[in-house]
Image 1 (cartoon, helix red, strand yellow):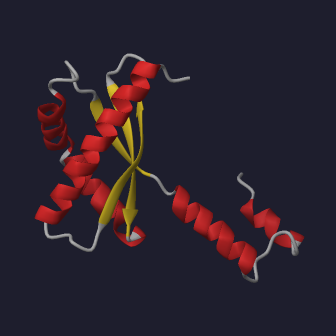
Image 2 (cartoon, helix red, strand yellow):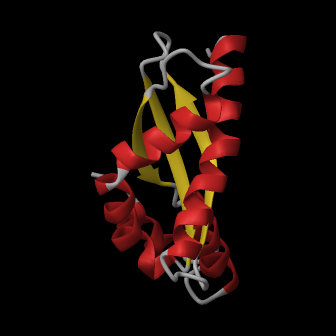
Length: 130
């Protein structure tokens, strides 16, 4: 369970990371891409922050994630400039794609379409994890 301090630091990081990433996307000429920070989890010792990103359109998410990961040190530097009055030390940033919206969308399509596992039980076998 997260402490109040972890939650506060996570919310500060989330707000500023949205500004940094959207600004970087705009300055890089990516006007048709939306990057949002869906969640930030900070470890108990406040040394690492896991940043979950939702990237639209989905087909560019892996490409953009690689670019963001390769620029993690620059992003951390920008973040440090913004939060220098609130945090003494900025945690290391690790970025992940949050595909939960895409997952929900696929479930809705399956339920509305021909592949309804409620009506056709044979479809459940191919969805089981091994």
